[in-house]
Length: 82
Length: 422
Image (cartoon, rainbow over all chains, first blue to last red; front, top):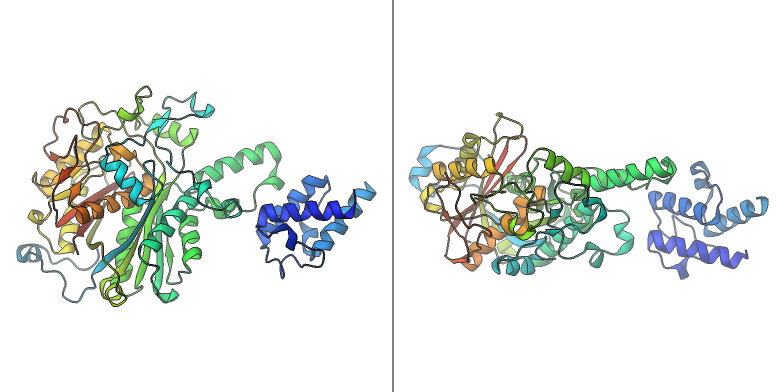
């Protein structure tokens, strides 16, 4: 799966759960500070991303995912190692 | 309850309301009910004599002894945006819809947030969330529970949702007194204004818990009508052949204001919330006691500075249960008399539980405003032991200046509101 596809999929999930338009979900954006996603929505997004890509995203790892790129990298790492 | 009663002297004086006490006026109203998605559509359907009760078209109803209910005429999904809905229980969605309508109807008062309070009562709270998430827990495990589970199920959730929407910072309250919750919210709202704690209060009630557990539970008590084959005829308050109430869902919200605050901003008062009586029976958990209801009516009159002769209309709680209607009929007859025009609007709406008191307060305000009293549906043979002037068949043209709205809840809660023309 190419990075673009992962990014697009993540953006769609973010829009679905938080209402932030997918075209604003760009790699450099910070989830909390830029996209204003609150902590509970972040948990839902993580679960949805995990389900979508069949990767484990433990709750304790969420604080390391500051930007959209962090999420994409995490998915790539998990899917390559899988 | 809203200030110290001074007993018979005030009644005898006829209108000797506390001279320094702030008047509380209603300046906006909102609702979503089985009759309509807002106040105007609900009111016109009520006056047209429509029923909001229908067969439940869902597979889970098939195994229940009761398969009828009053579901919302307008789906909240058509009104509340999809992302917001993920965070809300259905009872919170309907409270938000009603609150938005009420706020707009009041002209969106320009009030200091620290002088704006919210009081939204609920009988049951976020039961659908609790039950749905419990299903998820059992099927999928704890990690797939919604992180919004707790805010969606907590009984103060609806009040908090409205508080967030309105930016209300003078306090947010959530009275729970079963089917008196909506009326109690209005009583508490008036108390906050009279105590000087707020200038504007967004107050009402909400419940949306149609589910096999709630319907099954009420049915197990013998509280519900089992007229599954004739849903529109099932809710029959004060009728000889009534056999229980019909569950319904929805919300009603009113904007209450200190009268001089409303006047200063040029708001049009729809009615005066002139008094409230709140009592408890301490008699039985589910069987009502006429004595407790009578004390609530008398307190509502005393609080408003009115005598029983001043009351010319009563919107009765009257749910259609064999016992409840008889007890209330006795209480109204003894505490007010047989002269008021009485109607029981649950015959059309069904029983909105914690929203009922607020929705019926709205109907009472509209009766004062439009000089018309909606008819009680399905009242073909007045029950033995009911000696009241009941409005049946057709709405009655009448111009009440003062009216009562009664609400009673399991637990022995009695709340009576006195509403008058501005």
